[in-house]
Image (cartoon, rainbow, N blue to C red; front, side, top):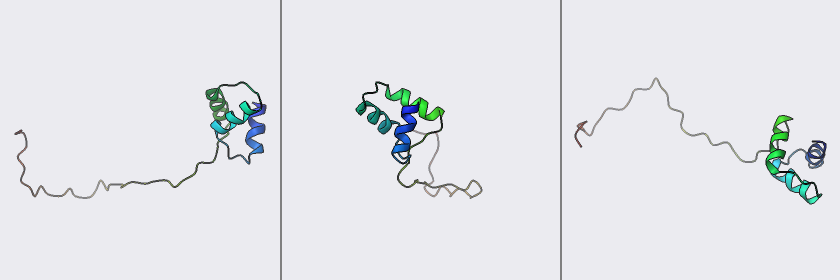
Length: 77
Protein backbone atom coordinates (compact mmCIF):
# COMPACT_ATOMS: atom_id res chain seq x y z
CA UNK A 1 0.00 0.00 0.00
CA UNK A 2 2.87 2.39 0.70
CA UNK A 3 4.10 2.03 -2.90
CA UNK A 4 0.60 2.65 -4.27
CA UNK A 5 0.21 5.83 -2.17
CA UNK A 6 3.69 7.00 -3.17
CA UNK A 7 2.99 6.59 -6.90
CA UNK A 8 -0.48 8.15 -6.58
CA UNK A 9 0.87 11.22 -4.71
CA UNK A 10 3.90 11.58 -6.98
CA UNK A 11 1.53 11.94 -9.94
CA UNK A 12 -0.55 14.73 -8.41
CA UNK A 13 -3.27 12.32 -7.26
CA UNK A 14 -4.68 12.03 -10.77
CA UNK A 15 -3.57 8.46 -11.57
CA UNK A 16 -6.21 5.76 -11.46
CA UNK A 17 -5.58 2.11 -10.63
CA UNK A 18 -4.44 1.20 -14.14
CA UNK A 19 -1.75 3.86 -14.33
CA UNK A 20 -0.60 3.22 -10.77
CA UNK A 21 -0.34 -0.49 -11.59
CA UNK A 22 1.67 0.22 -14.74
CA UNK A 23 4.06 2.49 -12.84
CA UNK A 24 4.55 -0.16 -10.16
CA UNK A 25 5.39 -2.71 -12.85
CA UNK A 26 7.92 -0.30 -14.36
CA UNK A 27 9.51 -0.14 -10.92
CA UNK A 28 9.66 -3.97 -10.80
CA UNK A 29 6.93 -4.41 -8.18
CA UNK A 30 4.93 -7.54 -8.98
CA UNK A 31 1.29 -6.93 -8.12
CA UNK A 32 -2.04 -7.72 -9.80
CA UNK A 33 -3.99 -4.85 -11.32
CA UNK A 34 -7.15 -5.94 -9.51
CA UNK A 35 -5.27 -5.87 -6.20
CA UNK A 36 -4.24 -2.27 -6.88
CA UNK A 37 -7.89 -1.43 -7.67
CA UNK A 38 -9.12 -3.01 -4.42
CA UNK A 39 -6.49 -1.37 -2.24
CA UNK A 40 -7.03 2.06 -3.81
CA UNK A 41 -10.79 1.74 -3.32
CA UNK A 42 -10.39 0.55 0.28
CA UNK A 43 -8.19 3.55 1.14
CA UNK A 44 -10.28 6.09 -0.77
CA UNK A 45 -7.71 6.82 -3.49
CA UNK A 46 -9.28 7.82 -6.79
CA UNK A 47 -7.97 9.07 -10.07
CA UNK A 48 -9.41 12.07 -11.87
CA UNK A 49 -12.48 11.36 -13.98
CA UNK A 50 -12.33 13.30 -17.21
CA UNK A 51 -15.18 14.28 -19.45
CA UNK A 52 -18.60 15.79 -19.06
CA UNK A 53 -21.48 13.97 -17.39
CA UNK A 54 -24.15 13.19 -19.97
CA UNK A 55 -27.66 13.68 -18.70
CA UNK A 56 -30.45 12.24 -20.76
CA UNK A 57 -34.09 13.29 -20.65
CA UNK A 58 -35.66 13.29 -17.23
CA UNK A 59 -39.36 12.67 -17.70
CA UNK A 60 -41.97 14.45 -15.64
CA UNK A 61 -44.21 11.84 -14.01
CA UNK A 62 -46.97 14.45 -13.56
CA UNK A 63 -47.13 15.31 -17.27
CA UNK A 64 -50.07 13.94 -19.24
CA UNK A 65 -49.38 11.17 -21.73
CA UNK A 66 -50.09 12.06 -25.36
CA UNK A 67 -53.28 10.72 -26.92
CA UNK A 68 -53.18 7.75 -29.30
CA UNK A 69 -53.71 9.60 -32.57
CA UNK A 70 -53.09 6.55 -34.75
CA UNK A 71 -56.16 4.68 -33.46
CA UNK A 72 -54.28 1.45 -32.93
CA UNK A 73 -56.16 -1.67 -31.96
CA UNK A 74 -54.48 -3.47 -29.09
CA UNK A 75 -54.30 -7.24 -28.93
CA UNK A 76 -54.50 -8.07 -32.62
CA UNK A 77 -51.25 -9.09 -34.14
